[in-house]
Length: 156
Image (tube, rainbow, N blue to C red; front, top):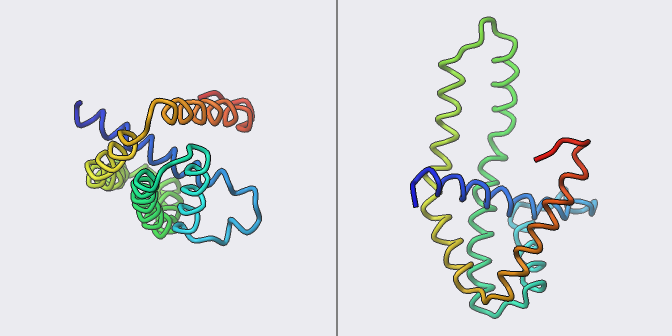
């Protein structure tokens, strides 16, 4: 598999797992939970839904724990990124070099974490049986359809 494909897959799965964790946000208390607590909640939900054994639960916990760590790092930088975007938009002309540098910085984070995330994801998925994999596909399809109905008519 090409490096670019791995990066795209890891990014999509990371966002998917993070999105799954945030999907539980309908509960008011969820907003005040730490990323690790959200990851634990997501792991518990998936574990029950897939009827995971102890080994599979451990692999899922490793994966979601790492995603939580990465998401926490991203969240810590959110305010500075917002300030950067505000400044970038108001400055005339747009500083293309600065914007490209910021994009490269974000891409580097994905590239740096991609091999580890691919490995953790592969360990988890490879530990699943055919029925569990089919259930994951069904969960993803359900989320895909659910998401498109909530975004004001925008399609994926």
